[in-house]
Amino acid sequence: MAALATAGAVLFTGALTGCGTQAAPQPPQAAPATTPAATTPPPAGASSGPASGRTAPAATAPRKTLKLGAKGKSVTWLQRRLTELHYRPGKADGRYGGTTLTAVWAFQKVNGIKPTSTIAKRTWDALETPKSPKVLVGNGKPTRAEVNLTKQIMVLYVGGEVELITHVSSGSGIPYCETATWQGKEQRFCGSAGTPTGNFKTTWRATGWHKSYLGQLYNPIFFNGGIAFHGALSVPLYPASHGCVRMPMNVAQVLPGLLGKGVPVHVRGKFRRP
Image (cartoon, rainbow, N blue to C red; front, side, top):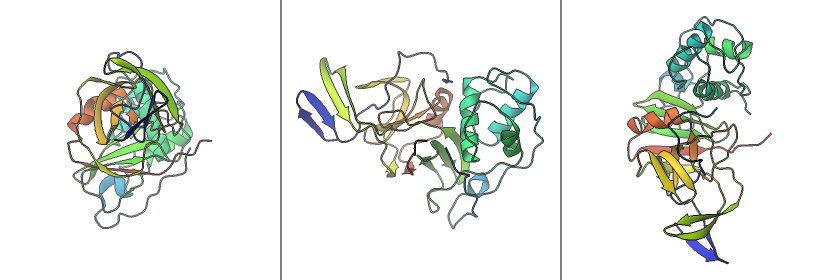
């Protein structure tokens, strides 16, 4: 990775080992615009199952309007249904909190619904007859990760089947310059904060909190130089990182067991701010 010292600053043309500034490490927990996803038939070599346009069997939703903080059987149904559809809402404990919210956002984005914390008619309808995430690489390997920057989601395929769909927050695209203590001395780091599109492969990783020159990353899995998938305490509905792909903490906890080394990672699209 090229680095250029300019007027006391270090200018990076890419990311180093860290791209999302974090608060002080906490116990893993989740922090609390889109067009409809395509449902085209699978091209040759594409994954079967939900990713290729098929949907899970119809289910009867409880239809009770839910807001963040709700409790009860309707929330349990929501959590179980999202899990069945390969989202990660956390335990089916009947409590609608931040972990379930990020799974709801991912589901709504895949189904062309503006992300919101309220579960109402459109979301219940979609849960009964869900759409599948758009396949970005029709001839991709059976096991691969696809990052859709336009919708801010990541889909993991394992053995040709959808294993996980999650909400993410990628690079903001806003140039930055930040001062940090790195390798024993204070340095100024500048970069573009973008998440490049292209085809990559997972490389090295770290377990738990990993200290980078821009902050702390949880369970990072690197795939493009210093750009990684990693857990974050803040995963907003817009690109906010320095270039990495932030994801909810509960997803980052399980991802290392699902995504090995040398697995293709395909990054496509471009986020358009409202």
